[in-house]
Length: 175
Length: 140
Figure 1: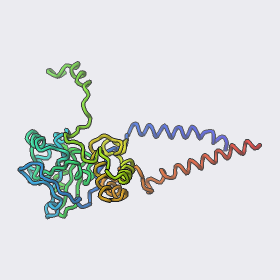
Figure 2 (figure 1 turned 90 degrees about the vertical axis):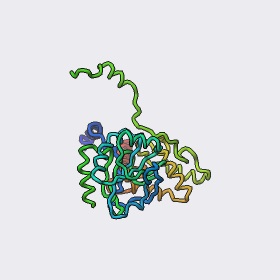
Figure 3 (figure 1 turned 90 degrees about the horizontal axis):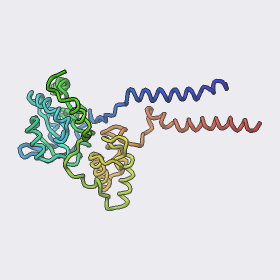
Figure 4 (figure 1 turned 180 degrees about the vertical axis):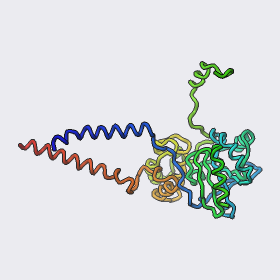
């Protein structure tokens, strides 16, 4: 018994060593993903960001037609990388709405002029209220809301060219 | 090597210029992000809650400690909801519904978290057991 106890500190040390090594070589996933898939779109109403198109209202999402909601910002660099993919999706006739987080109209207009404009509606989310209500922890994040106003698909981070077929398929499946 | 590529020294120098890792917007902080509530009782309630909510973009800090824009917006949200008479637990539940338990520094008792709750008891028991051995030896 006593002999065995002598080994306990070594075993504890080895467990500690393995834990640290695993943590070093495979850091845990720090992406905080939205838990809103399967839930209704939270109630909100955002004023229009630009004069040429409407803002965003949660009442727009139970009309029978699925829509994509893209949380973005003109000050967000990955959003620039995502812009061509959103345009490609919009060209298929899929409606994309935008939640513009903490943004100014002149900056959004400039962003759309430089990087493309896929948006049907743009709501101004000046203090991140709708971003938080959607469970988005950053920009860009993308949701697909079905015709009953329920969030059915969620994409964390920018939509890369390889993600486009998935997003389109997810949208078509909801039609 | 590719012709017309920038000289290596230039690339090395360019890498030395620090680039901001997180972009920030140009809008001013939200109302109540850096302002206390007028009612000290409500402010106390809000602060106690903010200290147990995790900042989503900085991750090692509570939203009360963080200067990130999103943490400021979350503080504003907490203060406004407390001012509107909402209970802190309801606000915490609302955030957990959106971000999962991760957002809260107060983990609930669940099968996944039971080692976390059991560890102090187990360690204390082990300590008592070791101490017991010590005392017995001294008696001899």
